[in-house]
Image (tube, rainbow, N blue to C red):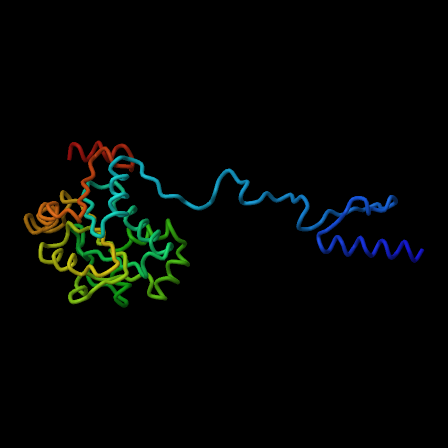
Length: 258
């Protein structure tokens, strides 16, 4: 009886340690457990899954592929095109990708606070609260790549910064990924000031649609800036077209006739 208990204790020890020889099984044992770590598990491993939960960034058109390649190889990119071509989303997604990979130390988001033909008056709160309605498209793109909890945590740590265009004068943005959205609502002087904020080890992406400016005719400086910078080899100017629109098909049809 003592030998039986000793052998049974040895089997229990082997089970706990994850090493078990089938020859050591007792013939009269009614319950046989498999090793906890080395044996079969009903849960499939991550390597065997056919589908991953991590969203991969893939272009949906030739224009988007050109834009993504330009961001990878140039430190200053101007993305011009109609609504729905994914300019803002790709810029923010590339910014998050660079931050997660450790290529930059922070993300700086900037957008002109210009209403689309309707004045909403003064807004309560601090600077971020006042800019929140204008930066909603950037927040939507961020929350699609990161959870809102992670976005708030990164903003609290200063790794994601909301920088109003009016407060960018005199700054030098080093080791940062800068996204300037809705640049068609910036004047020539504002864009010149923004572009010259670029510092060492930084990437800047300027997005806008020259055909949808909310400023008075002739005030927007995006088209003029883009034409001048196309002559600089180190700067990429990507012009997206109607064929690159990835929203509802009616968007492309409307832009073609409006």
